Length: 129
Image 1 (tube, helix red, strand yellow):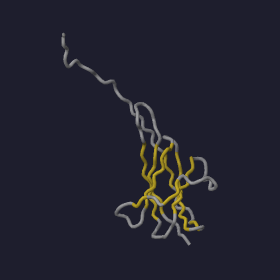
Image 2 (image 1 turned 135 degrees about the horizontal axis):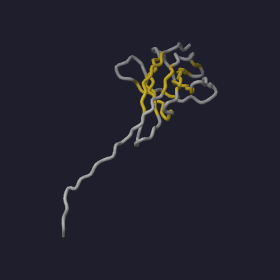
Image 3 (image 1 turned 90 degrees about the horizontal axis):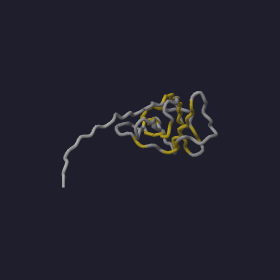
Image 4 (image 1 turned 135 degrees about the vertical axis):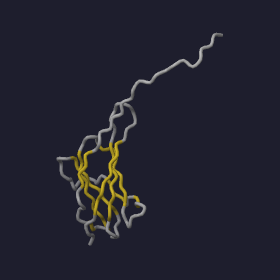
């Protein structure tokens, strides 16, 4: 039987051009508490919605090992809407078995807007030919 485990969170806003907000992402740390598992499934929901267990998970895989931790795994979920609040829950799977859901983490995605000021120019050289 797979036991409950812990989910932690880190957030990042991604911006690639001026005065425009872009997708946000979240990095989650999953502690499987030393259990043997085949997959970590991350389910998410936009607040005030609830989890729809019949929908595919936002992530399914092993995650990346987090250095200097016992067995923690890092998972990144991208393409999130800035300003939207999401909640996340993780489930471990082993064959056809699955764990109860982890703790639920609720996080509002940051809104990152870059506003550029006007550049200035000056003459470096003028030639008359």
